[in-house]
Image (cartoon, rainbow over all chains, first blue to last red; front, side, top):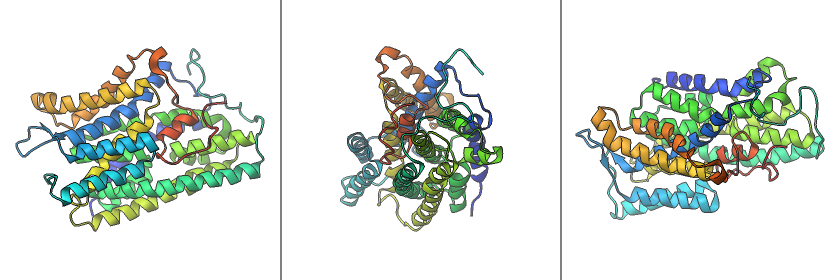
Length: 115
Length: 286
Protein backbone atom coordinates (compact mmCIF):
# COMPACT_ATOMS: atom_id res chain seq x y z
CA UNK A 1 0.00 0.00 0.00
CA UNK A 2 1.42 3.35 -1.06
CA UNK A 3 2.50 5.79 1.63
CA UNK A 4 4.09 8.39 -0.65
CA UNK A 5 1.48 11.03 0.11
CA UNK A 6 1.73 10.77 3.89
CA UNK A 7 4.65 13.24 3.97
CA UNK A 8 2.48 15.57 1.89
CA UNK A 9 -0.20 15.29 4.57
CA UNK A 10 2.44 16.27 7.13
CA UNK A 11 3.47 19.26 5.00
CA UNK A 12 -0.16 20.34 4.68
CA UNK A 13 -0.55 19.96 8.44
CA UNK A 14 2.58 22.05 8.98
CA UNK A 15 1.17 24.96 6.98
CA UNK A 16 -2.31 24.63 8.50
CA UNK A 17 -1.65 24.10 12.20
CA UNK A 18 -0.01 27.49 12.92
CA UNK A 19 -3.05 29.39 11.71
CA UNK A 20 -5.26 27.19 13.89
CA UNK A 21 -3.03 27.45 16.94
CA UNK A 22 -1.74 31.02 17.02
CA UNK A 23 -4.88 32.61 18.39
CA UNK A 24 -5.44 29.83 20.92
CA UNK A 25 -1.85 29.53 22.13
CA UNK A 26 -0.70 33.13 21.81
CA UNK A 27 -3.28 35.26 23.63
CA UNK A 28 -3.59 38.76 22.26
CA UNK A 29 -2.70 37.83 18.72
CA UNK A 30 -6.09 38.84 17.46
CA UNK A 31 -5.30 41.44 14.86
CA UNK A 32 -4.42 41.25 11.19
CA UNK A 33 -4.00 44.02 8.60
CA UNK A 34 -7.27 44.75 6.85
CA UNK A 35 -5.64 44.09 3.49
CA UNK A 36 -4.61 40.58 4.55
CA UNK A 37 -8.12 39.76 5.76
CA UNK A 38 -9.64 41.09 2.55
CA UNK A 39 -7.23 39.01 0.46
CA UNK A 40 -7.77 35.82 2.48
CA UNK A 41 -11.52 36.23 2.15
CA UNK A 42 -11.13 35.81 -1.61
CA UNK A 43 -8.62 32.96 -1.71
CA UNK A 44 -11.14 30.17 -1.15
CA UNK A 45 -13.50 31.03 -4.02
CA UNK A 46 -10.59 31.72 -6.37
CA UNK A 47 -8.68 28.49 -5.67
CA UNK A 48 -11.73 26.24 -5.73
CA UNK A 49 -13.13 27.82 -8.89
CA UNK A 50 -9.71 27.51 -10.53
CA UNK A 51 -9.56 23.82 -9.65
CA UNK A 52 -13.04 23.16 -11.03
CA UNK A 53 -12.41 25.11 -14.22
CA UNK A 54 -9.12 23.41 -15.02
CA UNK A 55 -10.56 19.99 -14.22
CA UNK A 56 -13.48 20.48 -16.60
CA UNK A 57 -12.04 22.69 -19.35
CA UNK A 58 -8.48 21.49 -19.82
CA UNK A 59 -7.43 18.10 -21.15
CA UNK A 60 -3.86 17.04 -21.79
CA UNK A 61 -3.59 14.46 -24.60
CA UNK A 62 -0.65 12.15 -25.07
CA UNK A 63 1.33 14.81 -26.97
CA UNK A 64 1.46 16.82 -23.74
CA UNK A 65 -0.10 19.97 -25.19
CA UNK A 66 -3.17 21.00 -23.19
CA UNK A 67 -6.39 21.59 -25.13
CA UNK A 68 -9.68 23.25 -24.32
CA UNK A 69 -12.33 20.60 -23.64
CA UNK A 70 -16.10 20.79 -24.05
CA UNK A 71 -18.34 17.97 -22.92
CA UNK A 72 -21.17 16.70 -20.79
CA UNK A 73 -19.04 17.54 -17.76
CA UNK A 74 -19.84 21.22 -18.29
CA UNK A 75 -23.57 20.57 -18.04
CA UNK A 76 -23.12 18.36 -14.99
CA UNK A 77 -20.98 20.90 -13.16
CA UNK A 78 -23.30 23.78 -14.08
CA UNK A 79 -26.27 21.76 -12.83
CA UNK A 80 -24.48 21.19 -9.53
CA UNK A 81 -23.69 24.90 -9.33
CA UNK A 82 -27.31 25.80 -9.97
CA UNK A 83 -28.55 23.47 -7.24
CA UNK A 84 -26.04 24.80 -4.73
CA UNK A 85 -27.11 28.37 -5.49
CA UNK A 86 -30.79 27.45 -5.41
CA UNK A 87 -31.01 24.98 -2.54
CA UNK A 88 -27.62 25.45 -0.84
CA UNK A 89 -27.26 21.69 -0.83
CA UNK A 90 -24.01 20.38 -2.27
CA UNK A 91 -24.78 16.72 -1.73
CA UNK A 92 -27.93 17.03 -3.84
CA UNK A 93 -25.91 18.92 -6.46
CA UNK A 94 -23.34 16.13 -6.59
CA UNK A 95 -26.03 13.48 -6.98
CA UNK A 96 -27.58 15.38 -9.90
CA UNK A 97 -24.18 15.95 -11.54
CA UNK A 98 -23.31 12.27 -11.31
CA UNK A 99 -26.76 11.28 -12.60
CA UNK A 100 -26.39 13.53 -15.66
CA UNK A 101 -23.02 12.04 -16.52
CA UNK A 102 -24.13 8.46 -15.92
CA UNK A 103 -27.20 8.84 -18.15
CA UNK A 104 -25.28 10.65 -20.90
CA UNK A 105 -22.46 8.16 -20.95
CA UNK A 106 -24.71 5.15 -20.48
CA UNK A 107 -26.92 6.11 -23.44
CA UNK A 108 -23.98 6.99 -25.65
CA UNK A 109 -24.80 10.71 -25.75
CA UNK A 110 -21.39 11.46 -24.26
CA UNK A 111 -18.08 9.74 -24.59
CA UNK A 112 -16.17 8.30 -21.68
CA UNK A 113 -13.24 10.50 -20.65
CA UNK A 114 -9.82 9.40 -21.87
CA UNK A 115 -8.12 7.32 -19.20
CA UNK B 1 0.70 42.74 17.46
CA UNK B 2 -0.72 45.50 15.30
CA UNK B 3 -2.70 48.18 17.10
CA UNK B 4 -3.83 50.18 14.06
CA UNK B 5 -6.54 47.75 12.99
CA UNK B 6 -9.66 46.57 14.80
CA UNK B 7 -9.79 43.39 16.80
CA UNK B 8 -11.35 40.44 15.03
CA UNK B 9 -13.80 39.73 17.77
CA UNK B 10 -15.52 41.33 20.72
CA UNK B 11 -15.10 38.20 22.79
CA UNK B 12 -14.75 38.82 26.51
CA UNK B 13 -11.48 39.61 28.18
CA UNK B 14 -9.70 36.69 29.77
CA UNK B 15 -11.53 35.27 32.74
CA UNK B 16 -14.64 37.37 32.30
CA UNK B 17 -18.07 36.49 30.97
CA UNK B 18 -20.84 38.07 28.96
CA UNK B 19 -24.60 38.15 29.47
CA UNK B 20 -26.14 34.71 28.97
CA UNK B 21 -29.17 34.31 26.74
CA UNK B 22 -29.76 30.64 27.55
CA UNK B 23 -29.12 28.27 30.44
CA UNK B 24 -26.14 25.90 30.05
CA UNK B 25 -28.46 22.90 29.83
CA UNK B 26 -30.67 24.55 27.23
CA UNK B 27 -27.71 25.67 25.16
CA UNK B 28 -26.03 22.27 25.45
CA UNK B 29 -29.16 20.58 24.13
CA UNK B 30 -29.22 22.98 21.20
CA UNK B 31 -25.53 22.36 20.61
CA UNK B 32 -26.10 18.62 20.45
CA UNK B 33 -28.93 19.00 17.95
CA UNK B 34 -26.75 21.23 15.77
CA UNK B 35 -23.83 18.84 16.17
CA UNK B 36 -25.97 15.95 14.95
CA UNK B 37 -26.79 17.87 11.78
CA UNK B 38 -23.11 18.60 11.25
CA UNK B 39 -22.24 14.95 11.85
CA UNK B 40 -24.69 13.79 9.17
CA UNK B 41 -23.19 16.26 6.74
CA UNK B 42 -19.64 15.22 7.68
CA UNK B 43 -20.54 11.61 6.99
CA UNK B 44 -21.82 12.48 3.51
CA UNK B 45 -18.89 14.64 2.54
CA UNK B 46 -16.32 12.40 4.20
CA UNK B 47 -17.63 9.51 2.14
CA UNK B 48 -17.46 11.55 -1.07
CA UNK B 49 -13.94 12.65 -0.15
CA UNK B 50 -12.81 9.07 0.43
CA UNK B 51 -14.40 8.00 -2.85
CA UNK B 52 -12.74 10.83 -4.79
CA UNK B 53 -9.37 10.29 -3.14
CA UNK B 54 -9.42 6.62 -4.01
CA UNK B 55 -10.34 7.36 -7.61
CA UNK B 56 -7.48 9.86 -7.79
CA UNK B 57 -5.06 7.10 -6.80
CA UNK B 58 -4.70 7.71 -3.07
CA UNK B 59 -4.15 4.53 -1.08
CA UNK B 60 -6.45 4.00 1.93
CA UNK B 61 -3.55 4.90 4.21
CA UNK B 62 -2.84 8.12 2.32
CA UNK B 63 -6.49 9.17 2.26
CA UNK B 64 -6.82 8.48 5.98
CA UNK B 65 -3.59 10.34 6.70
CA UNK B 66 -5.09 13.39 5.01
CA UNK B 67 -8.28 13.14 7.05
CA UNK B 68 -6.53 12.66 10.40
CA UNK B 69 -3.36 14.74 9.98
CA UNK B 70 -4.63 17.60 7.82
CA UNK B 71 -8.32 17.40 8.82
CA UNK B 72 -9.47 20.30 6.64
CA UNK B 73 -12.23 19.38 4.20
CA UNK B 74 -11.86 21.98 1.45
CA UNK B 75 -8.06 21.72 1.49
CA UNK B 76 -8.28 17.94 1.34
CA UNK B 77 -10.63 18.03 -1.64
CA UNK B 78 -8.36 20.55 -3.33
CA UNK B 79 -5.35 18.33 -2.65
CA UNK B 80 -6.96 15.56 -4.68
CA UNK B 81 -6.91 17.88 -7.67
CA UNK B 82 -3.38 19.06 -6.98
CA UNK B 83 -2.05 15.53 -6.72
CA UNK B 84 -4.00 14.25 -9.73
CA UNK B 85 -2.64 17.14 -11.79
CA UNK B 86 0.92 16.52 -10.65
CA UNK B 87 1.35 19.85 -8.90
CA UNK B 88 4.66 20.25 -7.06
CA UNK B 89 4.51 19.97 -3.27
CA UNK B 90 5.74 23.53 -2.56
CA UNK B 91 2.85 24.83 -4.68
CA UNK B 92 0.43 22.55 -2.81
CA UNK B 93 1.83 23.87 0.48
CA UNK B 94 1.35 27.48 -0.66
CA UNK B 95 -2.24 26.94 -1.76
CA UNK B 96 -3.04 25.00 1.40
CA UNK B 97 -1.54 27.77 3.52
CA UNK B 98 -3.67 30.38 1.78
CA UNK B 99 -6.82 28.28 1.80
CA UNK B 100 -6.54 27.46 5.51
CA UNK B 101 -5.29 30.85 6.71
CA UNK B 102 -8.87 31.72 7.67
CA UNK B 103 -8.42 29.49 10.71
CA UNK B 104 -6.18 32.19 12.17
CA UNK B 105 -9.24 34.36 12.48
CA UNK B 106 -11.25 31.61 14.14
CA UNK B 107 -8.52 30.82 16.65
CA UNK B 108 -8.11 34.51 17.41
CA UNK B 109 -11.84 34.78 18.05
CA UNK B 110 -11.85 31.71 20.31
CA UNK B 111 -8.59 32.58 22.09
CA UNK B 112 -10.04 34.83 24.78
CA UNK B 113 -12.76 32.30 25.57
CA UNK B 114 -10.18 29.53 26.01
CA UNK B 115 -7.67 31.48 28.08
CA UNK B 116 -8.26 29.36 31.19
CA UNK B 117 -7.99 26.01 29.41
CA UNK B 118 -4.59 24.35 30.02
CA UNK B 119 -2.18 24.97 27.16
CA UNK B 120 -1.72 21.27 26.16
CA UNK B 121 -5.47 20.92 25.70
CA UNK B 122 -5.56 24.16 23.71
CA UNK B 123 -2.86 22.71 21.48
CA UNK B 124 -5.09 19.72 20.74
CA UNK B 125 -8.10 21.98 20.31
CA UNK B 126 -6.19 23.86 17.64
CA UNK B 127 -5.77 20.79 15.46
CA UNK B 128 -9.50 20.14 15.66
CA UNK B 129 -10.49 23.72 14.86
CA UNK B 130 -12.63 23.64 11.74
CA UNK B 131 -15.28 25.93 10.34
CA UNK B 132 -17.91 23.71 11.90
CA UNK B 133 -16.23 23.46 15.33
CA UNK B 134 -15.74 27.22 15.44
CA UNK B 135 -19.30 28.06 14.51
CA UNK B 136 -20.76 25.52 16.96
CA UNK B 137 -18.50 26.59 19.84
CA UNK B 138 -18.74 30.34 19.47
CA UNK B 139 -22.53 30.16 19.21
CA UNK B 140 -22.72 27.99 22.32
CA UNK B 141 -20.34 30.20 24.34
CA UNK B 142 -22.25 33.32 23.39
CA UNK B 143 -25.56 31.77 24.39
CA UNK B 144 -24.34 30.82 27.87
CA UNK B 145 -22.06 33.84 28.26
CA UNK B 146 -18.99 31.83 29.24
CA UNK B 147 -16.66 29.07 28.12
CA UNK B 148 -17.83 25.46 28.09
CA UNK B 149 -14.86 23.30 27.19
CA UNK B 150 -16.98 20.18 26.82
CA UNK B 151 -19.10 22.03 24.32
CA UNK B 152 -16.04 22.63 22.18
CA UNK B 153 -15.10 18.97 22.22
CA UNK B 154 -18.63 17.97 21.23
CA UNK B 155 -18.44 20.19 18.16
CA UNK B 156 -14.86 19.33 17.28
CA UNK B 157 -14.70 15.60 17.88
CA UNK B 158 -18.16 14.06 18.08
CA UNK B 159 -19.74 16.01 15.25
CA UNK B 160 -16.78 16.40 12.91
CA UNK B 161 -13.53 14.51 13.49
CA UNK B 162 -14.97 11.05 14.16
CA UNK B 163 -17.70 11.09 11.47
CA UNK B 164 -15.35 12.63 8.90
CA UNK B 165 -12.68 9.99 9.42
CA UNK B 166 -15.04 7.02 9.58
CA UNK B 167 -16.80 8.19 6.44
CA UNK B 168 -13.47 8.73 4.68
CA UNK B 169 -12.56 5.14 5.46
CA UNK B 170 -15.89 3.90 4.11
CA UNK B 171 -15.53 6.01 0.96
CA UNK B 172 -11.99 4.80 0.32
CA UNK B 173 -13.01 1.17 0.43
CA UNK B 174 -16.19 1.76 -1.58
CA UNK B 175 -14.13 3.61 -4.19
CA UNK B 176 -11.63 0.80 -4.40
CA UNK B 177 -14.32 -1.71 -5.28
CA UNK B 178 -15.70 0.20 -8.29
CA UNK B 179 -14.47 -1.40 -11.52
CA UNK B 180 -15.29 1.37 -14.02
CA UNK B 181 -15.53 4.71 -12.20
CA UNK B 182 -16.00 6.79 -15.35
CA UNK B 183 -19.16 4.87 -16.27
CA UNK B 184 -20.55 5.70 -12.83
CA UNK B 185 -19.63 9.36 -13.19
CA UNK B 186 -17.24 9.31 -10.25
CA UNK B 187 -14.82 11.61 -12.10
CA UNK B 188 -17.39 14.41 -12.09
CA UNK B 189 -17.61 14.49 -8.30
CA UNK B 190 -14.36 16.41 -7.89
CA UNK B 191 -15.03 19.39 -10.20
CA UNK B 192 -18.67 19.51 -9.13
CA UNK B 193 -17.67 19.54 -5.46
CA UNK B 194 -15.10 22.26 -6.10
CA UNK B 195 -17.55 24.56 -7.89
CA UNK B 196 -20.20 23.88 -5.26
CA UNK B 197 -17.83 24.71 -2.43
CA UNK B 198 -16.66 27.84 -4.27
CA UNK B 199 -20.25 28.99 -4.77
CA UNK B 200 -20.94 28.48 -1.08
CA UNK B 201 -18.11 30.86 -0.22
CA UNK B 202 -19.37 33.71 -2.35
CA UNK B 203 -20.87 36.25 0.01
CA UNK B 204 -20.23 39.44 -1.96
CA UNK B 205 -19.17 40.81 -5.32
CA UNK B 206 -15.47 40.61 -4.55
CA UNK B 207 -15.67 36.82 -4.05
CA UNK B 208 -17.66 36.51 -7.26
CA UNK B 209 -15.07 38.45 -9.23
CA UNK B 210 -12.23 36.55 -7.56
CA UNK B 211 -13.83 33.21 -8.44
CA UNK B 212 -14.40 34.11 -12.10
CA UNK B 213 -10.96 35.68 -12.39
CA UNK B 214 -9.29 32.73 -10.68
CA UNK B 215 -11.02 30.27 -13.01
CA UNK B 216 -10.33 32.27 -16.18
CA UNK B 217 -6.70 32.90 -15.28
CA UNK B 218 -6.17 29.26 -14.36
CA UNK B 219 -7.60 27.98 -17.64
CA UNK B 220 -5.82 30.62 -19.73
CA UNK B 221 -2.53 29.90 -18.02
CA UNK B 222 -2.95 26.14 -18.38
CA UNK B 223 -3.75 26.40 -22.10
CA UNK B 224 -1.34 29.08 -23.25
CA UNK B 225 1.27 30.15 -20.72
CA UNK B 226 2.25 26.81 -19.26
CA UNK B 227 3.13 25.18 -22.64
CA UNK B 228 5.07 28.27 -23.67
CA UNK B 229 7.01 28.27 -20.40
CA UNK B 230 7.44 24.51 -20.31
CA UNK B 231 5.37 24.21 -17.12
CA UNK B 232 2.66 21.77 -16.11
CA UNK B 233 -0.91 22.92 -16.90
CA UNK B 234 -1.70 22.44 -13.23
CA UNK B 235 0.36 25.54 -12.41
CA UNK B 236 -2.64 27.45 -13.70
CA UNK B 237 -4.42 26.63 -10.44
CA UNK B 238 -1.65 28.31 -8.46
CA UNK B 239 -1.63 31.40 -10.64
CA UNK B 240 -5.43 31.63 -10.68
CA UNK B 241 -5.66 31.02 -6.94
CA UNK B 242 -3.10 33.70 -6.10
CA UNK B 243 -3.96 36.34 -8.71
CA UNK B 244 -7.76 35.87 -8.68
CA UNK B 245 -8.11 37.46 -5.21
CA UNK B 246 -6.04 40.44 -6.34
CA UNK B 247 -8.51 41.01 -9.18
CA UNK B 248 -11.36 40.64 -6.70
CA UNK B 249 -9.83 43.32 -4.50
CA UNK B 250 -10.14 45.77 -7.38
CA UNK B 251 -13.88 45.87 -6.68
CA UNK B 252 -14.34 48.99 -4.54
CA UNK B 253 -15.32 48.27 -0.95
CA UNK B 254 -18.48 50.33 -1.41
CA UNK B 255 -19.63 47.94 -4.15
CA UNK B 256 -18.46 44.73 -2.47
CA UNK B 257 -21.78 44.09 -0.66
CA UNK B 258 -20.00 41.72 1.73
CA UNK B 259 -22.47 39.67 3.79
CA UNK B 260 -20.11 37.38 5.72
CA UNK B 261 -16.78 38.94 6.69
CA UNK B 262 -14.02 36.41 7.27
CA UNK B 263 -13.62 35.36 10.90
CA UNK B 264 -17.29 35.71 11.78
CA UNK B 265 -19.69 32.83 12.46
CA UNK B 266 -21.52 33.73 9.25
CA UNK B 267 -18.30 33.22 7.33
CA UNK B 268 -17.55 29.94 9.09
CA UNK B 269 -20.95 28.67 8.10
CA UNK B 270 -20.17 29.37 4.47
CA UNK B 271 -16.90 27.46 4.70
CA UNK B 272 -18.62 24.62 6.52
CA UNK B 273 -20.04 21.78 4.49
CA UNK B 274 -22.93 23.25 2.48
CA UNK B 275 -26.25 22.05 3.80
CA UNK B 276 -25.05 21.88 7.39
CA UNK B 277 -27.04 24.78 8.77
CA UNK B 278 -25.94 26.13 12.12
CA UNK B 279 -27.79 28.33 14.58
CA UNK B 280 -29.89 31.05 13.00
CA UNK B 281 -28.60 33.88 15.17
CA UNK B 282 -24.95 33.32 14.35
CA UNK B 283 -24.94 35.97 11.65
CA UNK B 284 -22.35 38.27 13.11
CA UNK B 285 -20.18 39.05 16.04
CA UNK B 286 -21.70 40.35 19.24
